[in-house]
Amino acid sequence: MRLSILSIAVLSASVTAVGATSAQSAPRQLTLVQDGRVGLGKTGGARDAAVVPNTNGRLAVAPRNGWEGSISVYDSAGVALPWKVQTGRNDNAEIMMVTRAGWIAGSNTLWVADRGFSQVALVDGAGKVTKSIEYPSWIHPTWAQRREFPVFGAMEPIAVYADQTMLIMPARERSLIGTPKYDHTVSHLLRMTWTGSIQRTIATLPLSDGYIDMRGKNGTGYTMNIPFAPRTLWGISPDGTHISIATPGVSTADSGTIHLVSLNDRGDTIFAKRYPYPAVRVDKAAAASFLANIRAVGTLSAEKLRDSASKQIPEFQSLLTGLLVGADGATWLEFRAPSDASKETRALIIDGKGELLGTVPMPDGQRTAAATVDHLWTFEPGRLQTPTGILRYAIRPTGAPPARTAKPSTSPTPLRPPR
Image (cartoon, rainbow, N blue to C red; front, side, top):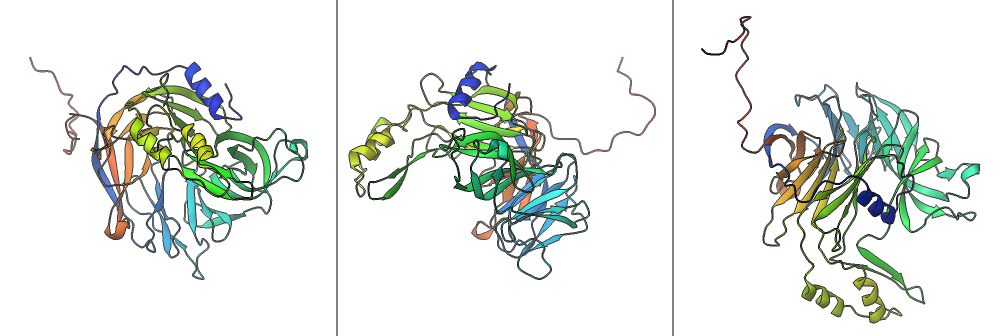
């Protein structure tokens, strides 16, 4: 089954049709046990970092949207490799401002999206910048696809591949000719060559998810967030081989479930399933109060705005707050507690084949950074919310004994059962 163009309607239909996880079966309870820490060192005051595990155990950490800092890579034991890549505006920096990073699948080559120099830099396993892929001036279709895609003037790199292609989110659309096959109502994830030639659509995502954007007769624009509206979340693995798209079930028919579709790097469906999560009805009094407080804006009447907003208020709340995709294809779905009085956050862990492994409480007060099927990385909070380190947690069954610390026996004599 292939989803080359993934609209929300198709997403919901396919998820319902493909095998589902029973909402009645309670997920296995899991526990996080801290088993490592990496100090961030000099990050230039950045309050965020790109944390990207590789399938071979390496972990890259790059200060995101900061000026002065460095990119570091650690081995599976948390020991820093003997090199760093400087970032910032200094003369020695080949990378100015990191916005995203990842690995080229099956290699130790790290790719770094650099908004400052408008490039994607490739860093090899020895810490050398081996190539700079400049952002193309125009992202364009081939002549045969000129009716399928417009031209774009900007992009956000999402993944980089060894066949000299990358996955991008395009922007600044320019329609030079008619493109009847292109859906302008959704956001597109496109596969393109490094030179800017569009190959295909990999997935589509909601363009206005959780808000309404309206225009009046005189050009007056107004954007309104809808506090109760569900939001579709998506994520991608560090090597770009797995894309996960999660849609909350908020109607009577699908309440108490989350719809998850996993795609590969060509847009083919790996799995599409439903998973259980608590269902909480939207407070009707709170929804009515929100609608009653909407006022007219310019030529947009209050009635028209209320009508548009009311269509996005569902029957059930969405408790989905976050989504992580691991280097091994695992997906973590984060949920807030059903009760507003509780600050607890839990996550469902789903492996790369769609198997629900269990649910785990998340560390209090720590932002998630990365995850795999058996580990979670979070930011260690510091002063003014600037992270001071990366904490690594192992996943254990709840109630399991602690891991052994004693050295195993070296005796060649096998152990015998007692008589």
